[in-house]
Amino acid sequence: MRTLRGNQALCEALAQEMERDERVFVFGEDVARHGGVFRVTESLLGRFGPTRVIDTPISESGMVGLAVGAALMGMRPVVEIQFTDLVTIAMDQIVNSAAKARYVHDGAMHAPLVVRTVNLGKGTVYSSQALEAWFVHVPGLKVVTPSNPYDAKGLLISAIRDPDPVIFIEHKSLYGMRGPVPEEPYAIPFGRAEVRRQGADVTVVAWSAAVALVEEAAEELVGEGVEVEVINLRTLIPFDKDSVLDSVKKTGRLVLVEEAVRRGGVGAEIAAAVVESEAFGYLQAPIVRVANPGVPVPHSAALHRFAFPHKDDVIAAVRRVVAYA
Image (cartoon, rainbow, N blue to C red; front, side, top):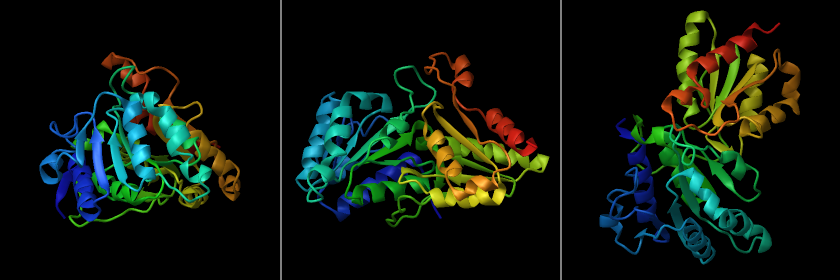
């Protein structure tokens, strides 16, 4: 199978859905003439014209407000917010307008829009937060976190076709990552995790950029005789609880890895789901979370090691649960 970079896979998903459905249009800052800051929308303006690929002013609240209105009137808007920190400016439109549309209209109206945004990871205090837990907390939103080019294309196609608002959180590391991607359109169902690696000793659940980190750690742990089962969650809402519980019943141990702040994070919700289920009786060690310890993202690259999960942190967490008596 041919390989694409993550930004190429996303662009292909947008183009194929725009060809399939004339209601789909793309807009945001620098998405048209510039082709997007990360080249996700490159070539779309030439193919679909300025009425379907639209550069906007710097106004995140206005952009998402437009998306909500267009979606309620039957369009399929895809709006780009250049990095996740900027969703703070559009929270009213996302949380109070888009997320509530189906409920307040008693199911008669939907808001089928996609908000694409980016976790930059190791950047600065104002552009590198991982805020997915905010959206997981809001009824009415679906939250998607692709970790590789194949997932990026299939999940974005599903997001555009979904009848409800989707927060589609990409990661900067995804854009340059290469991987196999089918040329034909395909949709990856929401709420279906992927077991990236089979293992019998410990389950490690991750999403977004943390998946590659966990796979690297798992490969190194083979030399110690530890077989890690790696689960790529793909979507946070809906959450594939069954896959996680089945794996925990098999391994008896669970480690959760995320770039976001540990306190109140998605990992805490997954841990609670395991403890509240029949899988709790299978646990042979405490659940361990590897995440940002609760600090702003530092500008200094030398300090990133203390704010973001590292391969060694994952290895240490796995060793801890495996050794627990």
